[in-house]
Image 1 (cartoon, protein in one colour):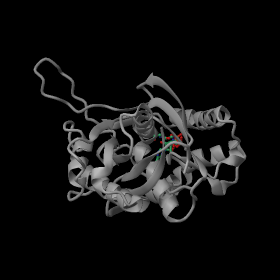
Image 2 (cartoon, protein in one colour; image 1 turned 135 degrees about the vertical axis):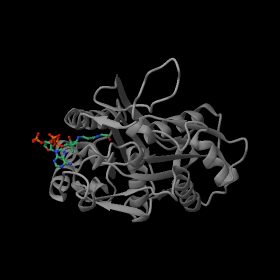
Image 3 (cartoon, rainbow, N blue to C red; image 1 turned 90 degrees about the vertical axis):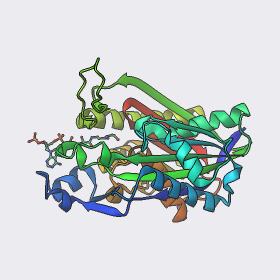
Image 4 (tube, rainbow, N blue to C red; image 1 turned 120 degrees about the horizontal axis):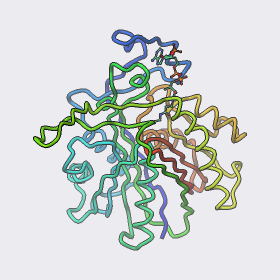
Length: 321
Ligand code: UT7
C-alpha cells in the first residue's frame, strides 16, 4: 500500500525579524544577507508560542483541508531538531491537542533539514507493512531561533521558526519513492547539547548551532542534483515529467544552482526563503502548503521534494500529488 497527500497545513510565529532588525545587535547588513542568501526576513517564536502551538495549528489546517476527523489518524510522525521537552516527544503532545485516538502511533524523529522526507519514508513503511491502513500525519516543527548562536553573524541570520504538516491517506496506485545518503559527519554542521549537572561529567556545551557554511554549500549543490537524478532514473522519469521541485530552503544561490544544473524552467522551483529563512525540516512542508493553496500543483502531478543538511544527509522523495 502506498499513500497520497490529502491535505497540507502550515503555521508561522507572529513575530517577523527583518535583516535591518539584526543590524541592531550584529555586525551585518541587509545588503550582505540578501545578496549572499536571498533572505529578507524570518519568523521567530515569542514567549506565548511554542513548537506545540505551531505544530498543532499546522496539523489543524491540514486536517481541515483533508476533511479528516482526528480519530481517523493512525500514525503521527513529528520531525524536529528538538521538541519543547526532551521528553515527552512532541508528537505525543500534538496528538493530545488534536484529540487523536489514544491508540495512535506517535514518534519524533530528528534528521535535521531532511526530517520531513524521512518522516514521509517512515509513514510509507507503515502503510506498506499494513500496520496502518487509513490515514497518517507527518508534521515538521522547528524552532531554529532557540538553537542559533545570536552572536555568530555567519549563521544566525539564516534561520527562522515554522511548522508544516501533511495528512496522508492510503492509496494503492500512487507512486512514492526515495533516494538518500548519509555520511555521519558532525564537524561541518552540528548543534551541541546543553551543559548538564552530572557529577561525573564536566561537559559545558551551550547547545548552539555551529556550521561551516561553505562546506555545507558545496555538499548541497552536489547532492541535490545527485539525489533528484537518482530518484528520477529509478522510476524512468525525466526532469520534464516533474511539475514542481520543492527544495530545502537554505540559500537562494543553492536553489539557483540546482535550477541551472537541472536545466529546468525556474518556475518549477517555488521558493519562500525570502520571507521565512531556513526553518530546517519545516521548509519543504510549509512551501508545499503555500504552493497547494496558491493552486501551484494539481492532483496527479508528479513532484519531487529534496533536502540536505546535518548528518550530513541528503534525500529526494518522488510523489504523485
Ligand atoms: O539547512 C542547513 C544547511 N545550511 C546551508 O545550506 C548553508 C549553506 N551555506 C551558505 O548558505 C553560505 O555559505 C553562507 C550564507 C552561510 C555564507 O555565505 P558565503 O558566501 O559562503 O560567505 P563566507 O562564509 O565565505 O563569508 C564571506 C565574508 C567573510 O568575511 P571575509 O573573511 O571575506 O572578510 C565573513 O566574515 O562575509 C563575512 N560574513 C558576513 N558579513 C556580513 C559572514 N556572515 C556575515 C554577515 N554579515 N551576516
